[in-house]
Amino acid sequence: MLFRSQLMSIDVTHSIHPLGPVEYALLGLLRLSPRHGYDLLNEFRPEADLGEALRVDLSNLYAALKRLERQGLVSSEVQAVGSRPPRNVYDLTPVGRAEFERWLLEPVRHNRDIRLDFILKLFFVPRIAPEQLGELLDRQFAAAFEQLQRLQNELKGHPPGSFGWVLRQMRLTAIQGTIAWLEELRSAWSVGETSA
Image (tube, rainbow, N blue to C red; front, top):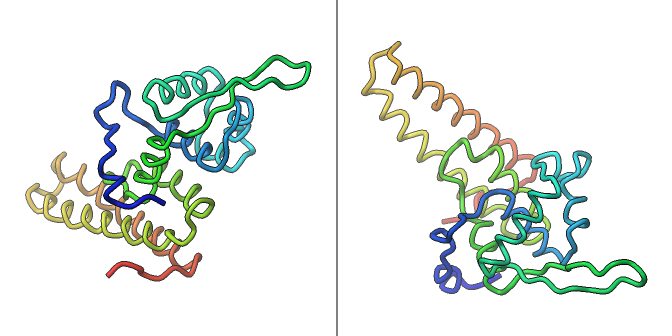
């Protein structure tokens, strides 16, 4: 893993096309090993672990790879394969690796992002940095409790039954469910708090 000072110097959030779940999933797969397009596509099959969380078709996969290459996060090299047509093999650049590693341990800030972004992190952390699993869970717990407190305070400002109250009550119930789920994960993986 890179030092935090190195990670903070990389900023792809202001790029032409901000990175989303598909791009981070591709960076993660390439962090595991360089691959060609069809090998990457196999990871998104419905019966594959990653494919249960995120589906990507061939055209979207190649479009995302091209965006990542234009942003300097991925490089490709044409490889000849016997009598078959040559294929592009994709790999992370140092900037791509640093961006993925920065994203990997950063908690999601909105509960709606738990369903996809945080799940992707849970897919990759055990494979890439298993020693960081406790830290990831601790950070996500802290972010979830921050959301919980904010929503509890906001709820007080809306009369019961008003639309604002209904909306915040729904979000409050959802974040409480997320916190319970994070506690179950911590228990199932026997991960204690790691941060001070």
